[in-house]
Structure formats: structure tokens, C-alpha cells
Length: 165
Image (cartoon, rainbow, N blue to C red; front, side, top):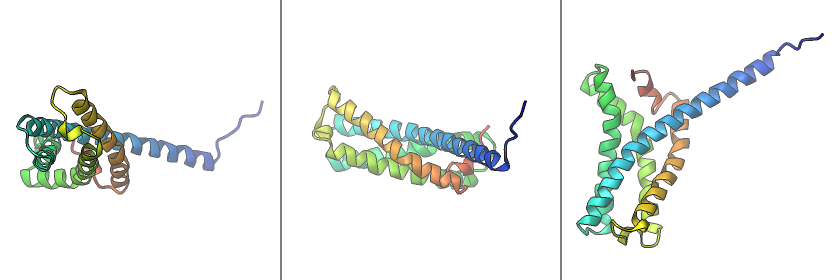
């Protein structure tokens, strides 16, 4: 009986596939992490703007501000809990989340503006909630390759990954 031994080439290919899978998993995790913070802020901002009948500009601004606040907060809290000093925590949070949150907010805000009636829909409308859900999911799809690219270069969430317990 003849046994095949894996060649160095197939072993390198297996390692490369494993590395790509690990990179994609980490990028997916980073994207979900950022999307969670963005979604909390975005939904809260859209609800506030809609409830108070603010214009599109004010509603989008409050949504973006809150998305950044909650997005950064989800990174800051565990880093502080790990014992890192505030200055280092803030540097890590800004370095790890800014590109991802920015990408999500651009895509999400543009979609909310181009989906017919989304910005004028009321809080009890399926159009409001459906448009918001779709825009956030699409924003996450756009942020995934950004996160993957950053992590592959030792940036983005790769910077905070070592500090998480």
C-alpha cells in the first residue's frame, strides 16, 4: 500500500488557507463588533430625529455622532477593564475602529437617503425599520473588506485583539 506524503507545496497551501480563514474570521468578528456599536447609535439617532421631526441633516448627524460614541465605547470598555491607561485605550480605540465606523456610516447614511421614503417614514412604519435594517446590513458588508485589509496589515482590530481577555 502506497501512502502519499503531503508535499511542502500542499502544506504551505493548507497553512495559507488556514491563515486566510483565520483572517476572515477575525475580520468578521471585528465587523460585527463595529456594526453592533454603529447599529445602537444609528438606531437611537434615527429614532430621536424621527420622533422630534428633525430634518434629514440633523437626524443623520445625530445618528453618526451616536454611532461613533457607541462604536468606540464597545472597544474602550474592555480595554479599560484589562487595566490599560486611558491614553493608550483612546489611541487603540481610534486606531481600531475609525475606518470601519466611517465606512459603515457613509454607506448607511447614503442608503437611508436614497431608499425612497426612508427618511420620512414614521417610527411605526415597516419602511423605517426595514430601511434601517437593510442599510446597516449593507454597511456591514462594505466594512468587512476594510476590516480584513486593516487586520492583514496589523492594523484595525488587530491592534486591540491582543488586549482582549
